[in-house]
Image (cartoon, rainbow, N blue to C red):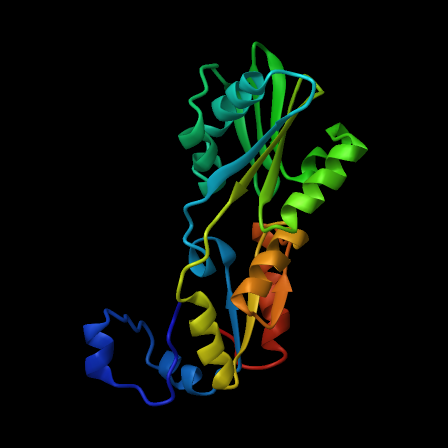
Length: 225
């Protein structure tokens, strides 16, 4: 987490490898009252792992093989968690990243999809959606997969919070700074992590191209970093 202090000690900044690109940034830090933070890799360690594999009327290995084959083309930490857990063996053609939603590709010339509940809603049975929301409330991120319009199942991934995140957030709040967690993750998962971290507000489900708009709205309320 970033430490913000009212009195800047330049020697300490050099020692702690703090880089200041614009000197007016130091002035802004002194009057800051809103800090927004990403979740993955900022409040959490950014090294998620697979916690649950829930196939739907198929063998577990089938779900893992198609999911890992698709995810090995992605550089997202959640995808890496799946490929670290299982090595997919299928060739994926016409691979596409759908920013903020998930992935698409062709396996055996059939469409395979993987991603969020928002993207996969039409493929997910109602009872699975309820189960996924319960998983999310535990701080897990559920990812859903389908092949040729057939729902394959769900893989849940969870990240570990940095040990010093709650304390760093508390110190900022003690300085009168409101801490807002801004993430593309689903609301239930984000609220679970935000509650443990102690942030003041959670803004979830924001696509990459929508984060700037959220920040601009926050700027109307005060000095934002």
